[in-house]
Image (cartoon, rainbow, N blue to C red; front, side):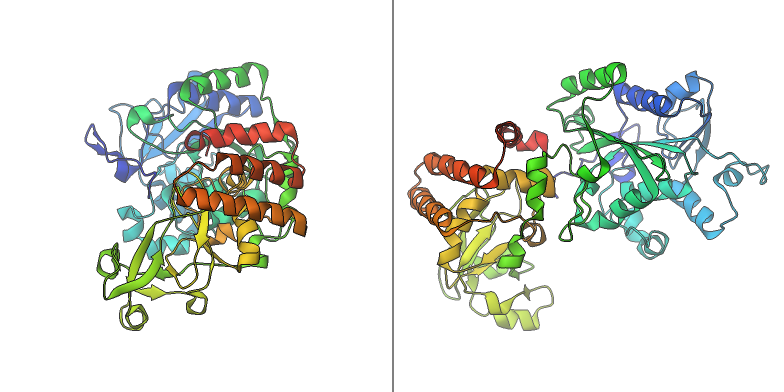
Length: 502
């Protein structure tokens, strides 16, 4: 997992385990001010992972009634009413007893007291899925979060916050934003869309938490419990860096957001899609998702997982390692020499060894295209006949289709479709590749792309530049897709710095 934060010991806190990262002051001020702008007359505030109170300072300064919950006491003295307890345990008690409110849990001396919150503000923990808390409580958590699944801490916090919020309550979050596009979080997205109004999505720069040695992709999100408040959604794509972001938030508070979208324009709702949240997607790009998908035309599959590559794969072809094996082509386009050799008894290993798996046996040794699975860019190379392949996406197709498709998959447009719209992480599985929209093309266009791909392939094989071929491929694809000039410029800017923009 390439984007996990490092383990950091500060004040005897293991940040990787607790998932606590201090919200920068300018972000905290923006979030509190925006919530107060969206709902000026509320009084009661809850922060279920209050940390050092950075998100509630503005509410406290305005004499709001603030309750903060945290599993760890991060400071000596709290100004808010601080409860040191696991918020998930609180939520479990509320869910088990429908008559029990959050207030009766907090006001132990007065179980009849009711204090329904006007604002819930949070920076949920960013633990990854293997954190000990989840591993040690998996069965109970699966039961508790049966509607959205147990994938990581932030998604469980988000689901619980939605459940405890009263009708009309404002919810302000700065959170890990992998749930925007990850298939694992499909049910969480559906829950948000079913139960909440979305007022704003502002993506944060990748360096926002770098001063805390955390490399996390985050976004600020403002929701409201209930669907009746839905209007246009203020949306901002990921800015290049923290300095620009600080100016952006200041401008948004003073002058309002620059870009607003209808809700249906920021969600992929086609039958082949999973309600992904798409940020600032141009209309002429969004319409492409109504076209047929790659998986409707070709088999898009994974192959062999050895469980321990060093035992079953070799860089040299020598008995018993005699079967050509193609792994993730990485940065290679058109042609890849990332070829290894697989043990000739791999089918026997599949039958005898539990963690050695051979998928799609009938499609092995067939030609096609092998695609990158990890890394910044999305790339595709020819998969030769008589070869096997790994768990990256592989498209099985004959030469008559492989060459034009290879050109298309290496185009700037497809890079943007994959990394800017479909999946904003560095793990691109066959499921995502199979959903890439395929442009309608006549035989003449396919022939042109085939010639360009073949030329690029031979140049790549000789370690020569194929930039001229790529430029012509992009020209043909943009013309075929009827993409506007301003959209092409948007795609260029996005692709020039994928690390910062995804």
